[in-house]
Length: 173
Image 1 (cartoon, helix red, strand yellow):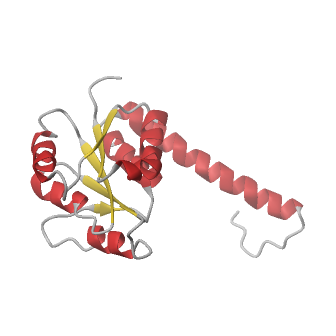
Image 2 (cartoon, rainbow, N blue to C red):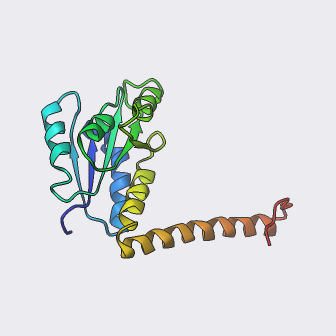
């Protein structure tokens, strides 16, 4: 693929099982990306270098996944001018994932991080595609088509409920 537009980073390679869902979505939309491990706690200088140079290398969005204390998305957002999408990950040392969710969600004023659901890397990929699609007409049309397909799937399910004999109390004409 061409030069990456989205950076997918994670605090540990154990996060890859979740974060590969963002990569799959970006592939589906034809968006180039890079994927690597950048730990806020174990490789802080690598994190600073990555965040400092991301925009200059042509990235437009960063998706950062982290578990536990989950400082990676917020620290990266404090360094880069790019939008950062945080993916809280339920890790082996997690408190049901709440520590990760709150670490990413509760950012101080001035350092926003868009936060998706726990283990929600797929939504992070869709959100990154939407950001890219706001400026790239081809990607924007792919995102619109994706959302139209979601609507079609739901309407098929509504139809199946009707044919299965369930009373539909809410029917929009």
